[in-house]
Length: 125
Image 1 (cartoon, rainbow, N blue to C red):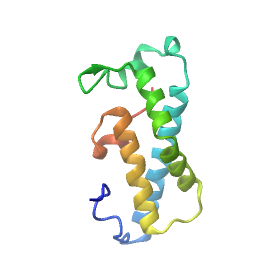
Image 2 (cartoon, rainbow, N blue to C red; image 1 turned 180 degrees about the horizontal axis):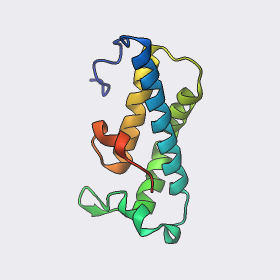
Image 3 (tube, rainbow, N blue to C red; image 1 turned 90 degrees about the horizontal axis):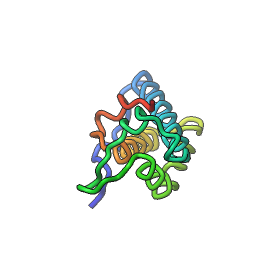
């Protein structure tokens, strides 16, 4: 069973939608980079606003934002590196672009606990 959505192989209908997807990938990549940087910040240096941006509980267990993001960055280091590589790469095929968008969305959803269709609204404080 694949964890990927079924429409990854669907081509973009036109260059405008492809360009919009590429731009969205760039924004998601930038947000991931900001969260990774935040994950390296010592817990006492986190502001209340930064802490409030992330969930405090995971599966019913207290999970403070500094520890959550640090664990997330470590656990998903390879996937984060792949998104960064694809975002920096020249032209991508439609499949590569859709896969990169999906992976970036899943990574953001995991760290923020937001639904994947809402992650583009997440802003790093």
